[in-house]
Amino acid sequence: MSTIARTDTSILGRWWWTVDRWTAGALLLIILFGALMIFAASPAVAERIGLDSYHFVRRQLMLLPVAATMLLACSLLSPLQVRRAAVIGFIGCIGLMVLTLLFGPEIKGAKRWLSIGGFSLQASEFLKPCFAVVSAWMFAEWRKETGFPGQWVAMGLYGLVVSLLLMQPDLGQTVVVSLVWFGQFFLAGLPMMLVGGALLLGAGGLVAAYFLLPHVNDRINRFLDPSAGDSYQVERSLEAFRNGGLLGTGPGEGQVKAYLPDAHADFVFSVTGEEFGAIVCLLLIALFGFVVLRGFARLFAEQSLFVLLAGAGLLAQFGLQALIHMASALQLMPAKGMTLPFISYGGSSLLALALGMGLMLALTRSRAGRMEAL
Image (cartoon, rainbow, N blue to C red; front, side):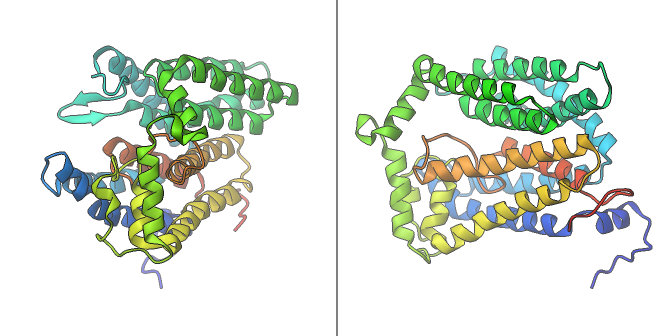
């Protein structure tokens, strides 16, 4: 039984009775499982590169309270405050993206990180949720006010964001941002003729990336023909799932993580498969699916187009990121270095996801005049 009475008019009391507690609970379970996986996957990686065994564990656990606080604080916001916070965040992230291109170190042929006070910041992670909300605002204003060129503003901002991402280059983030943006445009009323044009443009962009970006060409070739190049990581990932079977080898007992690069980040799902087995992996997939589907169910009862578009964009980002990570680990798509939300190691990813999911919880809270789907 809840200890917070319905008559409690404090900020926390109003939050408790308006937030979707089922979604918040599912997110909490994912975060707690992520903390467990940091202990399971990262010590072997740290030892392999000559660091203290719990180097990554300490760094991630230091940021967990910050992320939890950010998630809670963002979930307290009203839709108007969500929009304002996203605009400020978007402007700040654009500036940081430019600074990254100018002063960021080049790692593996890409400039994606900016060192600030000993912390490596990946501004593109924070840009994604802020851009989704800003685009939703522009599309909503376009539909609400006759003559307001919201769709053109959204297109201009999209071109700016994609240009900055491709200059890094980061094709994976570009694909996620593009899919979410076009999805929002479709929900806002994109004409079907332009839908076809967008699909052709997207296909053309992928073909161009294949011929113009060597690392994209290499990954696609290795996916289509594993013998065409080095497929070491994917082979070790699949080996981990085979070793785990249905029930897994047990927490900490996995062997593949000792020689699987980025086992604590890009391939943490593989470690999960080996140590906890297919059943836990399926339960984890169900948790991600629950968050996305329940969020959409609440949004489709929403009267505000802005709230619908912004919430849909944030949920789509969350679901796509999880899908890409898991599909890459299972060789269902070309390998792409993308974190598993709240589970992979990565400070920027953890905090950006807390920001995005906090805004999503704020947008799906019960409000006066809002129909309830669940």
